[in-house]
Image (cartoon, rainbow, N blue to C red; front, side):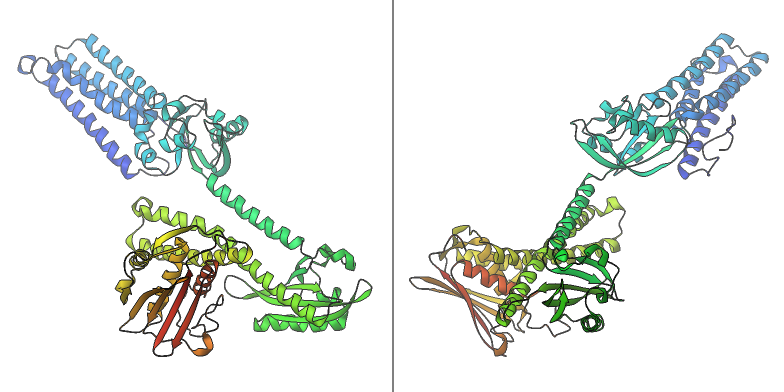
Length: 610
């Protein structure tokens, strides 16, 4: 550390900032004015100057003294001593020349100067005036900030962000011994001790205790101030981030437990064929050490002839990227066994193949029909589990991303974002919202497959429902829509699900259409059912595709490289499930090049559960 002489000043170690230049210029200007006024007052004959001026001109010195004491408390005494010396020198010089000035008054003024600098410095350090120095930093900071006394650890000042973080007011924090705010006082004292010794504490995870007793997890950065005998700390609340990480860890643990408890062998191999994951609850039944298999190859699990065949399948998956399903026989656990095996590729974020993932099940003793049935059920269960698990795991990271993007875009200026960056972030938000909608549809499909769904039935005005769908979707700006449903037609059903059905059908009628786009919506009824028809003059549906359009993940333009992204072929499938829950159904009639007619049958008596 460089030595600090009497004339050292801020910036000696790292250069003056623009703010320091302005402050020093202001202080120097008032010093010069004070000195020049003093010289002028003494040089003018006493009878030629207004008498009270002889009393007022010494008061000018208080201005630079107070400014130095507030802006640079460490140097207040030094600058005041220089000013007092200059004042006394001028007084002595003109007194020697015969000016009538009372030496006692000069001494009183000098003493007052020293008293003012001492009092102002003390207030700046202990009475909260540090906030003047740190005003912009404190008030505009997005993080919590506190300033502590270097020796005692007492809180001299804090900003509202930190106070609110711990449920205190700023005044309550002032004067408090800082270490008692930590979850353990010893940790707080040790951290401040490091700063006192000159160390920089950077982005350290620590925990505070709020006024109500709750624990607040934070990231703290502290350092000793180079000018003042204080420790400055910046505190960021990461409690929400901790909760998100805990949720992710819990999700990871659930997946791990699912894998570990599986009666099937679940494994992953690297490109060289070595097992990097090997989980099999029944491993001991077949005299296999599951943990020892990690790092080994298929040749150490099965006889060479079988292993070679399985390696060929794995190599084909690595090269071709397709999924392989096969059965094979092998001696394991001292007996002949028949196994069913599924292999698939694993990709990294760039789309490169990382290896092969597989599942294996012992199907010994089953007939061919039973094995085929088990295989089909297994595929369906795996598919449902994959959809549910993938949807949940995709939603978990999407939520904080959506939250942070909304927070940033609510006030881009506070994050110093220019218009181009804001535009890019809005584009990111739009795409994340699209992904969220896809995930929500996957979850909805999984819920309908796995459990009964309770319908919230109510009488709904059909015309008003469809008008709301058109208005929210902005569909009347995209096509000419003829709504031929009279007012007062009421249907019984779950309004939210009926809204989704109508929204999906109207959106499809417009999307798979051509100019001039026209959509007709009509209603008929009999004693048992309502019939709502949505007709378009669009491209139509090929006869071979009519049976498939209501299947999950079916896309009519799957092979079209220019098809829209953000779609998974779930809209019509979910709409059909919704109507089946109501005891109804959606049917379609279409002619290629002419258009399509979707008919929704809604029973007048709807079951509460489906």
